[in-house]
Length: 300
Length: 300
Image 1 (cartoon, chains in turn purple, brown):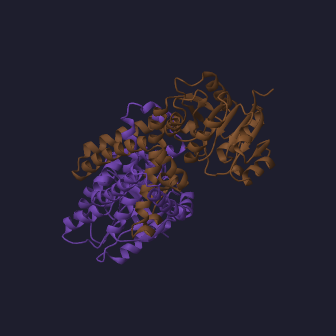
Image 2 (cartoon, chains in turn orange, yellow):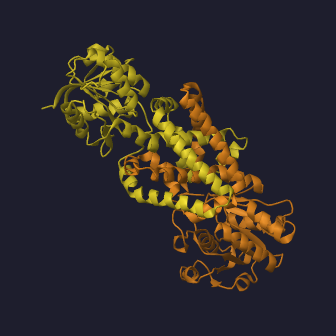
Image 3 (tube, chains in turn red, purple):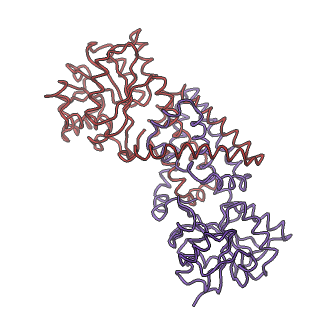
């Protein structure tokens, strides 16, 4: 017996497809419906047995759904959210999977004049180097964190339902305020991407770039791996989370400036103190990170 | 029949120990002798069959050696080099394994008044997360690059001999000027370490650090792995290579400043251009990097 009758997923990429597949397999939803702009991946979703059916018409796709999951790219998510808030009954729970929450909450308040009680913003910290519905895996969320960011006005039954949906995929669900989510993700995910892109772009512009990359070794490979991430997706995330991201860029730049000064003045004690604090912190959390990573290929 | 009668290695850590072990196994040297400040690792080296014998007395250890390899930490290497240049006959080839070459060349010129022809500076781009003689592996250098940085005044027979020594360990030997070596390593190894240490140190100082690390995922783990490197070693490298390192820190900071400006002004075209250039460069060299990495655990 399914927990909910119908779940509609907007856009069938890696995350939407993996969620659909997991929900089909575990029987959480009686029916899994998808919406998208083009029918290629949607047709493929039906063929792969990931969804029951689809519609290119949004109103038709969400009709009768208990939960609508916005799984489109970050910037489009804002438009989708506005459309849904203006069209679906307030008993329908709306949730999402975007990497930034503040811009969506702001859009919702702008749209409704208040926090819509049926909106439960969420973010599964999972991903893969692959993309698209073909890469969908029902085990993508196992042991991965899903962060829900309910407001005081949010309907607690709605939160419980979205939590149950993610727990059915064996994800580890936690709650935190929107602003905290955006700060934490800016620090641990968005800033590292910015730094990796910046480093590779800076070096690629050097005339010795052939040699630079030829003699790069294991440390460089690991450090710059995230610079191979999808530029469109990360440009959208950078803009959606710009307030938190700018703050943490400045924090980083100040710290780098201090270290630069210590190197220039050959202040070995200051350099050592910084490196030792960093090593202690990195080692302290290494075990935790390694544990998380066992189930994870890559996860932003 | 050995190629040389005797090789003396100064300090028996991971690199010195691995080189000794490889040279013992492949028979390149008739005798492998080690010197160190304390006899613990040296005794262990004899027990492990990595060296034939050792001495705590430098003059005794290098007596009769055809090649002396300085394998001490970066800053001590400068002192060792001065001592050797003032004491060993000029027919003895002196080489090293340090991560920075400019400071050693400057010390040699300062010491001798000219470039000593018997000095062949070198840098094996190999390493491991482990350290010490117990971690020594004779296969550590297989398919790894060794960069030699001879000057015009350097004895070509000496260069050929050092090249033959490394080739006997199945390393891939290349030559480049000292300044180019230091620029390339500053860009691909020293700067990434600085950035990783800086990021972790900056985040560890935040009051939300528990959450920050708790929700960090695969990308963060890879990005910050090198912040677990030995602080003493990296503080020494940062100071030894400070001229090249400061330049590349400034290059990076300027680029980060441009990107920060683009994010602040929501200039999505500029952000996209930077991310796309970076992704293209990273993808272009990814295959090369992956190929290098197959034989490598970690290599700075």
